[in-house]
Image 1 (cartoon, rainbow, N blue to C red):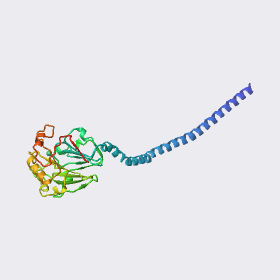
Image 2 (image 1 turned 90 degrees about the vertical axis):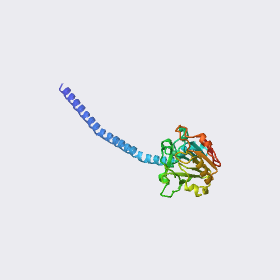
Image 3 (image 1 turned 60 degrees about the vertical axis):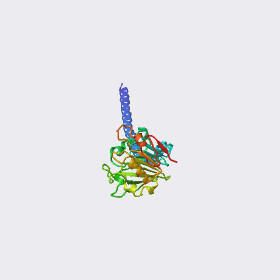
Length: 288
Ligand SMILES: [Zn+2]
């Protein structure tokens, strides 16, 4: 019995000792294992939190080089478009250059689809609402530039803008009660293939027309403002067209009815300029 009790006591003692040792071993090992684990986790989190930096900066760096793909992806539909000049209504004109660059002049009139090509350049002749509908240009290529009369008039001078795919020469516009030459311009847009388009903007006869400045530029496509209410009408515009001598004289900005059509075919029929060429909204000239 005594021995048995002793044996039991020894067994219990041994059991307690073993339990304590196991518990100690467990306590010793748990911090040991959990510490490396948590520090591994911290390191890997630190690595992964550090990685977004290095990873994202290469990836953002590759996004920047990847941005040429994105313009060229954006210019994929553009590249499919022929070099062209499209009349959109009122004073709105779209030009696609031989490089596939897209220029909108006085965005305002026309169907949404005519503004789908992403803009590389937007030209505004003056601040009136029917020339300044920048919200019509919903799609813009990266680096799209807008030039307005504020950029294009410098006192009596007009700075020239060279975009590589086009040279933009602002010229006088105005010379009537609602259009001051200091707040209005026309643009002669010369493309890389030598084609020159000249939307007059809102104007009556200008000194640039009278003094041979524009004739010396050998313009291919002149768009003549011909409303006869706010600006010169058909007769004055036809005379100005004779002064300038463009290869094609296209009447535009001739609908004062606010019909929504933004082009008056009968007024266009009465435009008696040499080399007259009538474009209806949506018509497009393909450039060779
Ligand atoms: Zn106008």
